[in-house]
Length: 493
Image (cartoon, rainbow, N blue to C red):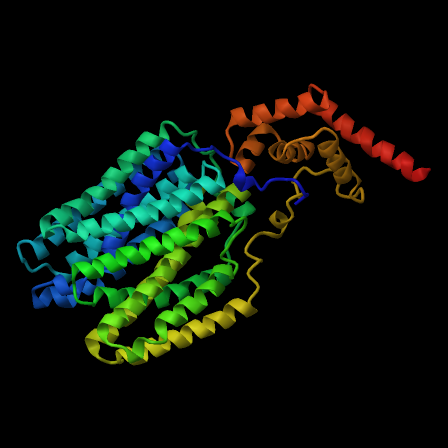
C-alpha cells in the first residue's frame, strides 16, 4: 500500500458515545446468552438422568452454531437481503423457546426430559445465537475499525456481568432472563439499523473472488478451541456456587478489557499466528500447575485459561470484521465461516472432557498434561507455518485493479498519482478514493470496496476535484498524465 493511504477498514461511520452505549447494551445480551448456554454447570442438576445428559448439551449448542455458520456462507446472497434478514429474525426469536421449555421442565418441575429433546433444544439455541451474531456482525462492520473494536470489548465485558446476574437469579427467573435476552438483543439491533446506513450488497461469487480463508488458520483455531473446550468443561463440572460464577464473570471482564488497547492496534488480521503466540505462555501458566493443586486452585487455573479464550474470540471477530471491510466482502459470507473453527474446537474439547469424566477412561491429570503437550505442539505449528497466504494473490497487492491499464509502464503512472497526492494535499481518505478513481473504478465499486455510503463517496470525489482544480475524472486523469509526461521530459534531459 502506498505510504499515506489509510487502510480501508478505517472507513465507515463514526459512532457517538450514545450510539456506543446502545450497541454495547444490545451486543452484551448476546454474549450473556452465549456464555450462559456454553458454560453449563452440571452440579445444579438433581436427577441422575439429567446429570448424565445435560453436560453434553453445549456440544449440541456448538453444533447448531457451526451449522448456521456454514449455511450463512453458502446462502449469503439470500441472508443479505430483507427476506433473509427476516428469516434470521425468526430464528433468533424462536430458538430460545424450546431451550427455555426444556430448562424449565428439568430444573423447576423436575421432569425427565428425553436425551434427544435436550440435544435438539440446545442445537436450535445454537442456530439462534449464530443468527444473532451474523446480524450484529453486519451492523458493526458499518463503523470505523476503532469504534467496532470498542463495541466488541465493552460488550463482552458487559455480557459477562449479565451472565453473573442471570446465574444468581432463582431457576425460573434465570431461565426467563436467558430466553428473553436474544429477542431483546434483536430488538435493540433492529432499532439501531434504522439509524445506520445499510451495508452494500456483495454477492457470494464476488466475495469468493476477493477473499478466502485457508485451512492452516482453520486448523490452528480448531486446535486452540479444543484446549479451551476442555477447560470450559472443567468449569461446567465444578461445584456450582455464586463465587464460581463471579470468577467466570471476572475472567471474561479481565480478558475483554485487556484486549482494548491491543485491538486498537489491529491493523491487519491477527489470526496470522500473532495472538496464538501471545496465548501460548498464558495457557502454560494455566495448565502447568493443574495436576498438582487442589480443586479450588485447579478452578483458578481454568479461569486463567478462560481469559485466553476471551482473547482469541475477540481477536478472531475483530480480525474478521477487518477483512470484511478491507476486501469488501459480505459479512454473512465471512464472519460465520471464520468464527466456526473455534466453535468446532470447543465442541471437540468439551466432548473429550465429558468422556474422560463420565467413562473414567482417562484421568483428569493425564488430560491436563495432554492439553499442555497440545499447546506446545501448537506453538511449533504457529512458528513454522506461514499464515499470510489466506488471501487471494490478487488481493494482496492493494494497487492491483481489474481495470488497471498502466501495469506495464514501469510504475510511472503510480509515481504520478503519488505526486498528485503530495502536490494537492489530499487527505488519507481522499487518497484512497483517488487511487480507486485513477484505476477506473466507479462509485458503486468504491462504495463497496471501502465500505462507505454513496454520500461519502460523492463528498470525497467532490473534495478531490476541488483541490486539484478539475470538474471530472477525465480532467483528473489528464493532470496525472501531464505529470507523467513532464517527468519523462525531465528524465530525457
